[in-house]
Picture (cartoon, rainbow, N blue to C red):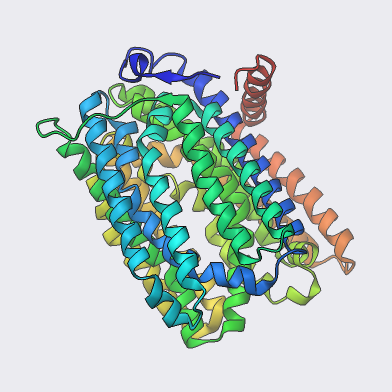
Length: 504
């Protein structure tokens, strides 16, 4: 575990060394951390569900909506600016640090001042104190944005993973202890406060950088502009991705929204478990390759290839076995979710690829093009919800999938122009795995249409075996050999090597 000190923070000569090794080790560390955090959340939910009431969670949820929205502006895209820029100075990062701090403080004070209004709006007087405390934890988080960005820049993903996991463990222990003592909803507030301060302490320990004074003439203006464009995109993306909930809740019903949201969450869980950690690791690596376009192209195309090989088939399985998966995971009472789940899975085939569209822009420092695409892509998403509402939640899900397909094609073509990467090469990287996936889905769907198999578990097992076998056969035919399998085994070998060397 490496501690980053002031002497090594701004040295750029070591950043490009062992890029593949750092990426693999970083991927292992980040995926492992996400897996541990997932089980920690599940375990803590099971324990706290027996100690707290739904009303306790509901009370905190009323404030969480506001805090989550404000957090979008706290970073202001400046952490990515630190990761992306080829050469940085102590003075530049100090300027960004103080901008992050001031934004966090101003937003925190606004939330603090609005606490009585929030309590009055919900008719819950206790929300005044709850909002005030959560606003304090919100302000604390702004103190380590640049420290974490520096760790990401140096690809210290193992360190970041340990900070996340240990902080969460301590927070969960504090929450459970407070809940056992009868603190009710204050247990959740206390856990949030402990998480913020624990994360602060560990981050400052591993990144021993002390910011200087905020000065003019540091050439940080371009980095601030970079962050501004990224924040603008995040703002547009936030509203476009939440518009479906508003439209369904307004024009159909809360029950329909519950069905739709469960289907969406069920599909996004495995996709986000892959895309989230991958983005965390791939972006710094791509930024380091900014000046070597050939290596940048190869690295990015390999990521697309692996995503289409692994992540997209997950969506194919979701479409093929939507009914069986919903019954198995949620129970027969949630059967209405299966149709929505299946329609969303159509777009899910390309969703992992669409999630990478901003990477090329950011790698070459063109966050303005990310924002411009947001001005195009977000209205397409919102329009799909408005059009689909005529046919209920199934229509919304299907039209959303069509919008994702349109946006994926358009955004990847647009992103390729930023990095001088032709759209033909992008299509070439993903065409054969995606076509193999589609053919496997069609084959199994046609086969089981003529098999009178009604038993759910048997149907699930049969479709699973048939899908995996068909997918492998079509991959073999498309690639005229076992190259995809060898590529997957090569990644697995690197992961095992990284683990055995204890370098993650």
